[in-house]
Amino acid sequence: MKARWGAAAAIAIIATILCDDVASTQPAATRNIGQYSCKDVMREHGDNRDVAIAFLHGFILGKSGGSTFNLDTLHKQTTDFIEYCPDHPGEPAIEAMSKIKG
Image 1 (cartoon, helix red, strand yellow):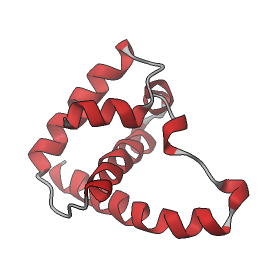
Image 2 (cartoon, rainbow, N blue to C red):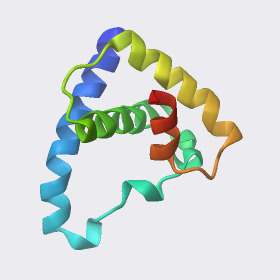
Image 3 (cartoon, helix red, strand yellow):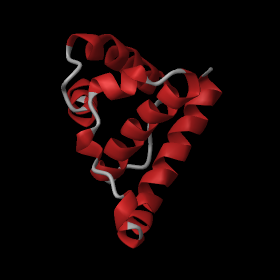
């Protein structure tokens, strides 16, 4: 399980780095991370939800300029996010994750 989170986090970090270039060349496919709510992420199932949550972790890590992370901490933050979102379904997912990562 820990290896899965590590791989998901690595993918999310790479995706975050690449997203700027892709989004700038394809305006019709451009999305704003702030438009996705907790409810949107929680509606995803299985691997799709795992990837969405890993993306949020990677986005925040990339935004901070950091490049290191602790898998146990990511796992706890993920659990906290999953428990937080049902009570705050309309909150932007990135804001919810930012509060949890505090």
